[in-house]
Image 1 (cartoon, rainbow, N blue to C red):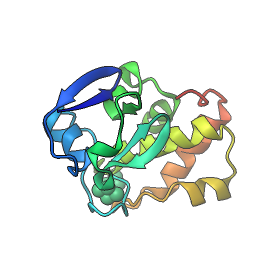
Image 2 (image 1 turned 90 degrees about the horizontal axis):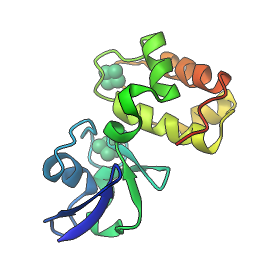
Image 3 (image 1 turned 60 degrees about the vertical axis):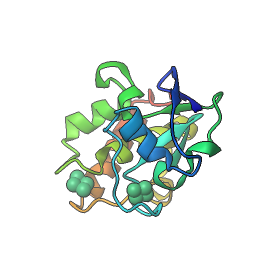
Amino acid sequence: MIRLNLNGVVREVDAEPETPLLWVIREQAGLTGTKYGCGIAQCGACTVHIDGAAVRSCSMPVSSVTADQKIVTIEGLSADRSHPVQKAWGELDVPQCGFCQPGMIMASAALLAQNPRPSEAEIRSEITNICRCGTYTRVLAGIKLAAERGEAGRG
Ligand code: FES
Ligand code: FES
């Protein structure tokens, strides 16, 4: 059994040590907001936070996360989708099909928590998630909107 702190709840999961964290999140914990895209740490669909940093959970063995590290998924980012990034996303209708968007939002929230006023160049270099629908322009606008409001420095 492996102990994980997932969205503030400590759980014990029965998984092989090398099982990707993504599969534990989706299958053992039933939190399916975090998506599987490529499985090789390239697309960012599987992005979650570990102690506030964005990580690609498809390529992280579950055994590499300790019980005292805080894992946050899109379901745990905020109550009632009230995180500034989520609010900006809604106002600007950022998603198209939506598949990549939990990862986009988690990556964006982590960026703004660490750097509340990123330059456009910083946003472009830090947010490397892939969107097959090509929402990049709206993602950029959404991050800028959340940053302009100066309220996104929270986890
Ligand atoms: S599914 Fe993890 S980066 Fe693509
Ligand atoms: S909104 Fe469709 S893949 Fe990004």
